[in-house]
Amino acid sequence: MQPRICPNCSSERNIKSGIINNRQRYKCKDCNYNFTVNKLGKKIDDYYVNKALQLYLEGLTYREIERILGISHVTILNWVKKYNIKRPYKTDYHPTYKILNPQELSEYFKNPKNLSGAGVLVTELGDKFMLIKWERFKD
Image (cartoon, rainbow, N blue to C red; front, side, top):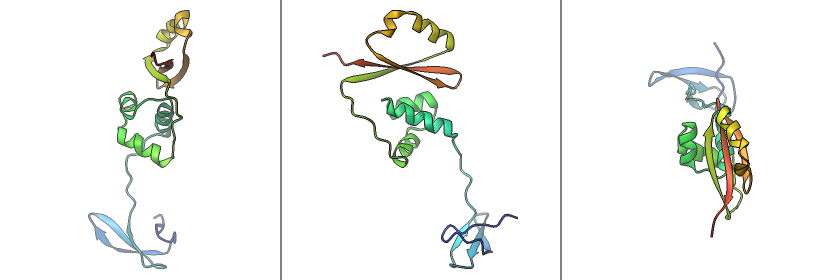
């Protein structure tokens, strides 16, 4: 059996102290703190955290990122707060995005008209690619 670590003082000296809601309760011998076994919540892969924050920095809204990655916009908002991510101020550019498979991406770059007048970023998104393009707002 693994020793439980007290969340209050990080001590491994604890004893069983009953069961609450079908979860074992423990009492720390050093600080007399009562605690239960940690919940094993749903863990989202770090790849999606990084991708969501990257897309946020590229100018996509929380809801757009939610539709692309399938992760709640509230979760993305919490990650932005947790990691203290600040979006750069760029009022004269507007990002647009497309999700393309490798063949569509190749066809997109073959057309010279798609390469002029805007900045482009290509990022991997699972088995597809996301193309983000910045265009100036038209007055």
